[in-house]
Amino acid sequence: MNALAKPEVGEFINRYFVSSFQRVGTFKINNGQKQGGNVAAYFCAPDGRVLHVIAGPVNDKVFLEEAEWAVTKAQEAIGEAKGDAATFRKLIRKYHAERLETAQEQRGSKNRQPNSNKVDKVLVSGATKKIEDLYRTIFEDILGETVTTKPVQADTPFRNRK
Amino acid sequence: MRLAYFAFAILTLVLGVAAADETALKSLAAPKTACFGTAVEFVESPTLAAKLAAEQKKLVFVLHVSGHFEDPDFT
Image (cartoon, rainbow over all chains, first blue to last red; front, side, top):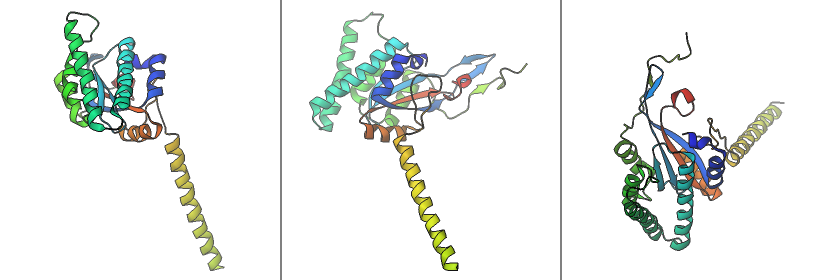
């Protein structure tokens, strides 16, 4: 995900998040070309409950906007919920419903990423669920990938060998 | 003499355990991170990320990828 290589993205993520990654899928390399494979970014509460998702690769500008939205809305929800988990959950889901409504009003706008609506539809009822309860829906149903532990299949693993 | 050796062994064991605890505490305080060619510092597991996020009052960022994120040729 090239967006993650940008200094401003790294600075923001490192400031507000503790980060990790997991391999959940695979792809093929045929004649030096990558076939298949994808990426999903989850913004979560410390207990692993999902607050927001970016499904698929996006550029640094979009990534930063989505990350900033996740942080801002999490802070708003924490402030309004005052420690009540049920209220926090309702608020986060409400924010995703509002995003979806705004997107539908701006139908045809080229600013919205193609998977954003699908993600918001999932998170209207799925936000604050644990990542292990959502990732298959995101990776398989939205991104069309298969969750697997199979290794990367390459026609040759020694790409630089002459 | 035997008692002296025994006492020395016990002392070494106790000091070793204390040092190991201190090392473990230090590694939790300053966890190992890697960037894998990005500007983001990744810790070694989502479980560790969640633990550190709770301590540092941060959120958790988890990247799900196909392939091997550690190897740019297989990401």
